[in-house]
Image (cartoon, rainbow, N blue to C red; front, top):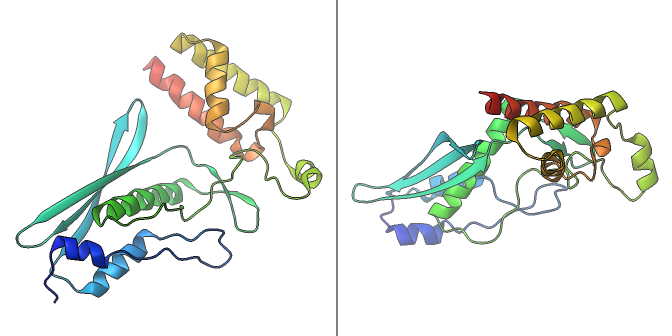
Length: 218
């Protein structure tokens, strides 16, 4: 076992990002950081603990990374919002949605990675392991934009009306103008208008608004 100071440990933990398969960006994952640490066989122990915290009505996973030896303990922390499950863009350009346990695990891993990177002072801007669709719940834009629009499965008129009704109800219980509430959710899901919403995102958006209504009504 190699004896080293924490500064020396940080210096040895400066692992490079790597590019996997057909991924557009190089990145590092929490497992990569753990593997490098284990291979060092140092006099330090490292653990990441997680807890749920709430700020301004939003839930976050808080990751606390701790490095310790018999004489010293150093900590760093990071947060990741446990937001509604997003629509993800796969490497072949398809839109796909995780199930909730997968999404919670991904958010936890995200928080853990950044806590460990802060702990070890690992540099460089990082890119997440998975790529959220650039247009969120809007259809994937490829080189053949017309074909993309033809294949996109938008919400129907009835679903559009349901969203508008929920927006109206939330505006009433919050005392905010309808336009303000609508603009908030359009911005959150990166839409120009709700008619651009894909059917796969309808329940996500509707549940998001309904949860906020329930919170306000108590």
